[in-house]
Length: 374
Ligand SMILES: *Cc1c(COP(=O)(O)O)cnc(C)c1O
Image 1 (cartoon, rainbow, N blue to C red):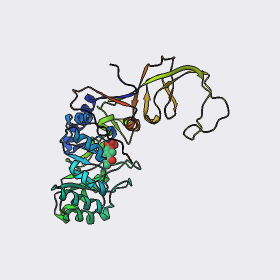
Image 2: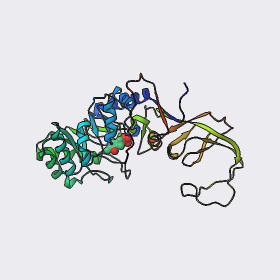
Image 3: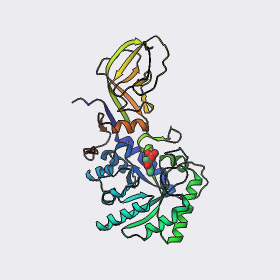
Image 4: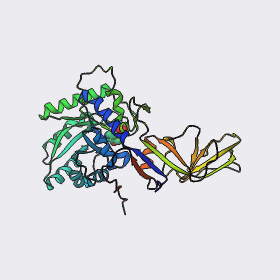
């Protein structure tokens, strides 16, 4: 049976290798790895590969993705890395073991929900350290921590922060030291152990793996939530590969539908293209223009790397236009490397099939999050 096209091919062995490599490098610093699966929508086989590589727990920003992992039989502790809404508290406490939180009403909803289920739910209070996404300001930390510590049904187990995602603020020794100081303050004021200090995401690896770091070992943080570096082997802040990691665990494969010699210059009066811009085109004479049956519904051009010799010229919703050295027969397959944005878009497209290789298939990957009906 031939493979469906378009498809995303996932080499699970490379994902397990990447996870293992990071787990081993962070172990001397006493930093655990939470393997983050949101870019693959909580695909169970990818989670299983991360676990094989030794991650301590799994994390995802969406309850639906964690539910998918639970349905596949994965019993590892799971962290909900985006605060639930109060409405989601019931599902959050039954599916996740830990939630990252930054609002008292959410903590209260988790408390109510977990008491109703006879559970105790762990919470980690997120602190804003400058990237201006989630988290309370340092000045507002103690009241929220105290509130969480006094409510039944929830247990305040730590603090967390997240940098680099919204404004590209680089996590470094200053922020990690500040987080450690805040944790110490909460420990002293509230008499809690706070074992879980979750310092950030893949962007923290530059800091964590810096051989010249002059900070104490073990590090002030005990956990990093890592998605991109395990999946793609790259450092999001520098956009560069991380030494020793595979950067080709994911390949997007699409099929040619047209490949014709055409002028490189459009003709006629020009207005906006289908996405409201007017592309600049230089006249390079005749070229071979090849169309693959993928589009912006399935790929993000910025995150798409074709094979050497092939150039991406543009894309509409459903046509990916390339320049190739020679004409290609319709049905021929072309392969592309993916960056984070490309991976996210391709995994989220219902038109792109998913095929895994490289490890014995641990569990069914059935059950992609179902679309919400309204
Ligand atoms: C997405 C996310 C992560 C993982 O980020 P990567 O760059 O993929 O490692 C970690 N923490 C939070 C809160 C996130 O939203």
